[in-house]
Image 1 (cartoon, helix red, strand yellow):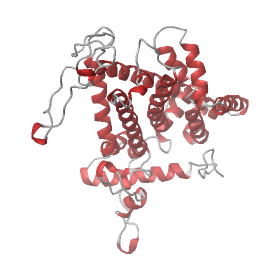
Image 2 (image 1 turned 180 degrees about the vertical axis):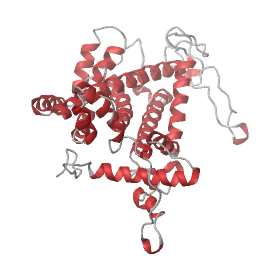
Image 3 (image 1 turned 90 degrees about the horizontal axis):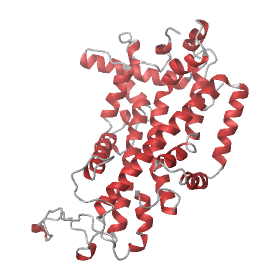
Image 4 (image 1 turned 90 degrees about the vertical axis):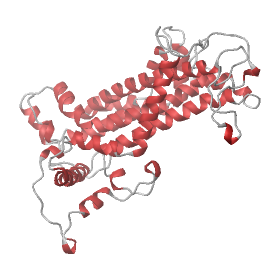
Length: 396
């Protein structure tokens, strides 16, 4: 038989997917123990795989730099920043609003490396565009993070309840999920975003509304994981010892789906950035006098041919944030499930290249003459973590 996501599953044992993943964790732990003389837990293996994912690590550093630049430059919530211009302050336009930033050295025929008074230029009303872009980056990042948190919480709870209780609860929750899915996301988000604009409170109502319509994919993924996990021995043991459904879900099931939840949360943040940009571009998201990256593109799209920097700066920040978050999500996915990712690749620049199957490559190092496996030392369960459900057994 197979479970909800199509993975073959034995009714009285773990799924083949969990067995393969646990076997790979055992082999990786054995190799590292031979090299370092100590065993690694599942969490340590995940962190090690993520640190070895070049694209994810570079993207994480780049995203942190964007955060620091956005929130320290113009300040936030009354805390002053190091940039002396306010995004809402108007003034005289200097040199037609042309950016003063120069990165080409003089010996290459440029104007030298300099920051200048208005590095990103000025808009028609004299506002400093660097301050406007930083304000827009702040708002877009806050919306994306809130959307990621809200959608992750809702999707995890709905999926866990549907997968554990099954029956009519599963039917009601999944039909509600299907109802949200069939409505075009942009249309639904635009309608709710328009309604949230009258609630006041800045961008938080908009972020909460977007979170209420982007949880469906995670709910279906968590439901599939829980449907498989609820058949495991550690869940049966917890129920037999008197654990109530809430405790089983929170202490045993959801911790064993953390990989799916974390990876999906990162992709939800990237999708939220693009969704907010689309809504603000169409006029249903962030409204003036506030700012966001999508709103800046919408306001200055007509200046693309005459003052293209007003279009390119917010566009590049949107692209940089979305790509960075997506690469981090790829790294987390490969770290939690090494069969998909970088442990079996020949990596090139930024980790891009063809990949081999990680399990075959890793187990190949333990093969003896003639291709036969050589029995090794017994594997400690610490390398398995929660993959086989062993870590889920505990006091109810």
